Image (cartoon, rainbow, N blue to C red; front, side, top):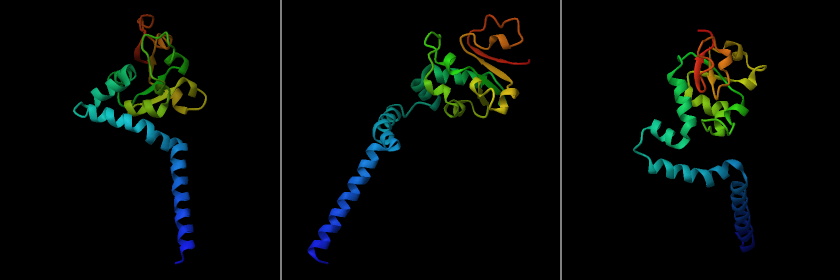
Length: 162
C-alpha cells in the first residue's frame, strides 16, 4: 500500500466518523440519547431502591396518580372515554396533568389491559361507541353518567351505563 492510498483511506475514515457524529447530533433519536437519557438514568440510579409505583409517582406526579386511580376503579376489560386535550391540559384544573396524558400510547401503558379512547377519536375509533366508563376531569363528562351524584363529581371515573 502506498503512502497516498493510506492517507486517502485515513481521510475517508475520518470523514465517515465525522458524518456519523453529525448524524448523532442532528437526529432526534440521538438527541434523546445524548440529552434526556443521561438525566433519566440519573433519576433511576438515585431512586433504584424505590418500587416502580413510587418511582412513577415521584416522576409523573398527579398524571400517574390519576391513571392509577382509573386502574383501581375500573374492571380490567373497561373501555374508558377520556376528555378532550383542552380539558386535560387546562391550567385552571385542580389536577395538573403532564401533556403526555393526551398521548394515547403513553397513558395506555399505565392502565393496561384497560383501553382508552379519547373524545377526539369520536368519529374515527370504533371503540368510542363501546366505552363502558368515562374519565371525569374538572366536571367534564359528569353530564353523561346516569347518577344522582353527577353534579358533585369533579374528578374521577364512573360507569356510563351502570
